[in-house]
Image (cartoon, rainbow, N blue to C red; front, side):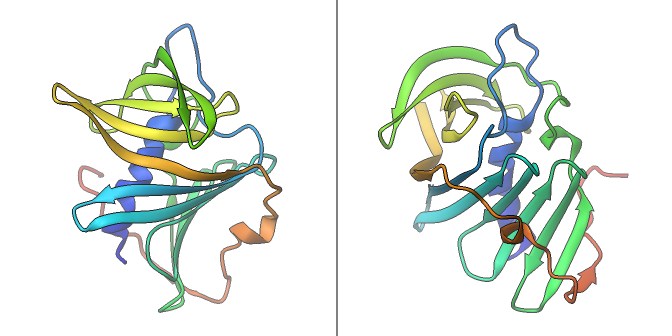
Length: 192
C-alpha cells in the first residue's frame, strides 16, 4: 500500500486534531489509552483500519488496510513515521501542523448526541483539511467514533468505529525499527 492510499485515511484524523475556536471545545485526541477498529466504506466494499493511542506518551499508531504498513505519530516530538515491513523502510517527516492540537483554524459546533457501536458520543460539525463540512461523533474522552461528510444529499459515512477497547497501550506498540532503511519523504503538493 502506498503513502498516497494511507493519507486519505489519516486526513480523517486531521479534522479531529485541529484547534477549536468556538466556546465549546471537544477533546481532539483521546485522553486515555484506546484501541479502536474502524470500517471505511470504499467502492470495492469496506476496509478495516486500526488506531491505537497511548495518552501518557502522546503516541498514535494507525494500521491502515492491508498488511505490513503502519503510521506512527509522535505528538510530543511533532514527528510522523510511515513504516513498511515488506521493504524494511521508514519515512520520517514533521507531523503536519494542522494535525497538532492547538494549531489550525477549524471551528467546532456542538450538534446532537449520538451512539455508535453501543457507545455514547456527541456529534460536532467542523470542516476537514479540504474545507468540506464533516460531522464527527466524539466520546467525552476524545475518541472519534464516526466521521461523515455532510452534503445536501445527506451524510456520507467516511469512517465508523466497530470496536473500542480502553486498554493500556504499551510503548513498544509504537516503536519504529531502527534497523530499517530511512527514505526521503515524498514531495507534498503545495509545500515549499
